Length: 186
Image (tube, rainbow, N blue to C red):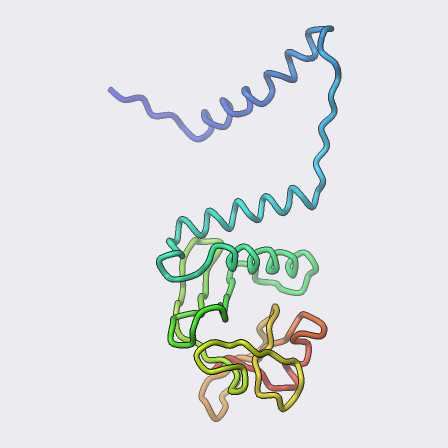
């Protein structure tokens, strides 16, 4: 009969491997004392990288066309906005990957808490941002160009293009005029 080990057993085993050198060091006067410190930002960055890699691999986002680096960048940005208190719902992450052509499904709405791709669909870019690829961006009114950066979603409304979602740009100089420019998702 095959023996099944619980996750708790695995964690205990892992902890014993991590603690064994510390216990040995305390019992042997031949060892010198070593203090290991970890920079909080480094720990957060590696945690974000681990989690985004787990999401990427679990959801097979490579097969949907999303680059691993794009997910990591978006996830780190989302976590930064959460930490700053600028977003309340950290479960949903939306990525518009402008490095892909406009005829690709380059909008990804991901439930990062429940490991689900909620939507992968097409998304346009500003009229003056380019044709197939968006390669020009602006934060100026009347530029008719897309703006790069992180956004927080606001309320919805029914406009001339149907149900639309207001966006608030979070990056000064890049997209902070999004509301004044009426940049929305519709």
